[in-house]
Image (cartoon, rainbow over all chains, first blue to last red; front, side, top):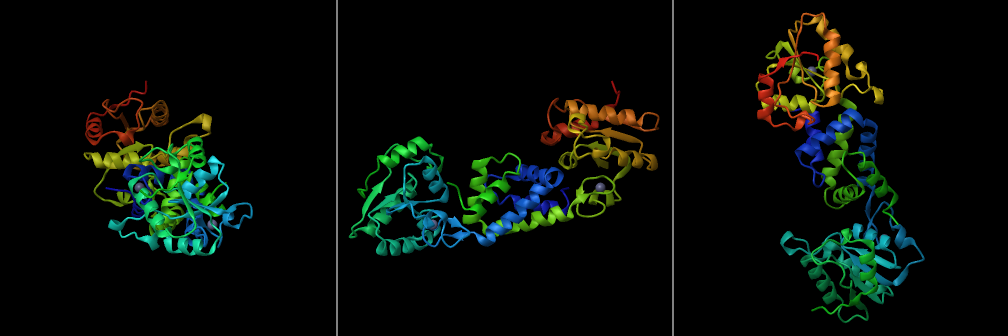
Length: 201
Length: 201
Ligand SMILES: [Zn+2]
Ligand SMILES: [Zn+2]
């Protein structure tokens, strides 16, 4: 036995959410159908709209429904500093920590040859084009302090050798093996201020 | 700083899901937008359809997109037995435990005067109408073994005094203070077989 076909399809569809197993999907579906219909309708329509309209900023690749995100449109950010992050969540965490006034570039992941994720999949062609034309003095490689994040930072560093651009990496203080978006603001802010030249070793 | 307005609205909309706080909503939104667009579109459309089409079965009040649910349409269920549960999830748990061949009635909650939830909000008018016309011999009060569930069972028992209908409650074995839908099948099945006359005390 199970629920009705349509309720079963809803359970199945909810499983697409990260961390949602069968029991959680069931609790969510019943909650929406029994007690939160208005909120559920809003979720369905906002989700459909976001998927239809939200894409990548043409300049920094963060998620936005406009051609350029608010940060890239701002005239108050230092164009000489460019911080490369794996995810929009990392960008938000750095902004919330405060103290950084430059711009960003969002990879949406990291290099992962085994999964078929190469340089163009994380926008490195766009990054290279931007660095070729812009007046960027320093690129801060703020990929996650994981094996994949480090490898991606090294790849970018190699790609930039020969250019008159300073490379740096966040200072120690960021816990190794962790994910940037879960680091507290104070640690993140200190790591920014204490950033080191990127040695590539 | 935050995400773009539309992404922020998506985060906000996801908070309607039970147990989803700001961090989880952010992880869900980014997961859908960065890696699961197809699954996200399916979720949005199935959710909208379910909210538009799924209502209560006209006979047992479980969730269904048809007038009568599959179980009420079945000719293989014993019409003399009627099991009253708080939620469709409880109904599913009892069916999965096996051993019960009667019909159901779903309250979608319990009496809660402080929250303004009275007898008609949990369908007791419909239950009474059904018991007045049908050949039901026994009503099994399978509300949750919580204070509210017990109070609701007592209310229904009072409502039925004077009728030639046997009342029973699930046997002990169901842990007190717990929620029926999380009880394992074996315990639930034993509790069904060992059900006791409802004493109303
Ligand atoms: Zn941008
Ligand atoms: Zn039914």
